[in-house]
Length: 382
Image 1 (cartoon, rainbow, N blue to C red):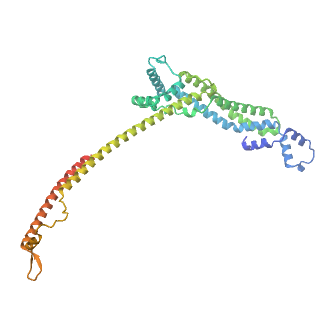
Image 2: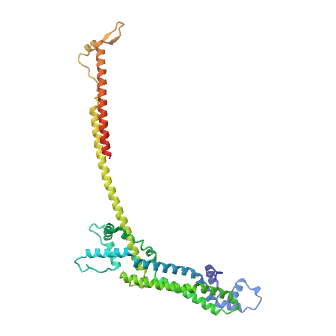
Image 3: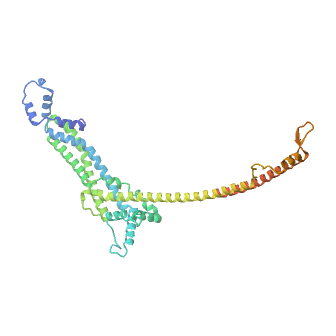
């Protein structure tokens, strides 16, 4: 079966001559070398027995590996996922807590004190029931309380790693694939038994090898599918899951649990985001208070420094009797030039001494104020 590819078979099916065309070509008794290529091809194909059946069987045989791989993957995923559901302690605990919460909410009503709940209804109520604010869902509240009680219970994906992928497989689809494999093996076996001609020896050898390699594995596929059905029956009984459409089993139940895991993870992310937002808001409030304190200290320092600095004269007014004052402070030298009198020199000396004293005093007071500002600054930034 390794000579022809799937593409070769598809092309062969399209150009294969009909039975009438084969009959017409077989009536020709002349020299074959004078025949056209199409006529030679038609005569060559007509010499093979059960051509249509062989072509169909070859096509199925070439697809056997792909179908077998699908069945192996499907049965393996389903077996693991169903076993994980029945052995998950975290999932059982979460469902028990959710049932207990529902009984507390429905206390005093005919729905209270329930011994169990339908999975579809339970997961739907967790999503749809909301608080008075219209934002907080029952699931968010449930996850928050479980997080406070024991957050490790919410890490259920680690116990159910195969559930999301296994939810894509249907028993009907797997059953059809196994049936197709069984029909392929039977068709090949039938062709081997019917090919007695010497020209069919190569075909019989290839077909026999194909049967030897795949007959035993085919029995294993059927046994694996039967085991999956038994595991599903146990899981559906454990979780009280009833399905109106058995054709969708077990994908419907597995999809519910997969969605439950995703909803829990989304709720945990939302809670973490709310915590981060609250912390950021509190930090922003602290920053605002710190900025206000620093602004107040800055204003105080500026006000103090303005009080300590001498006022800049805005222009001395002309005193009364200015001419007399000038005569007393200024005198003409022997050469006629004007110079300062001894009284003016004395006044200038006194003014310089006063200026030095005031500068020294201001420097001392500003240094003390700087130290005070530094202490206040350190306290305000701590």
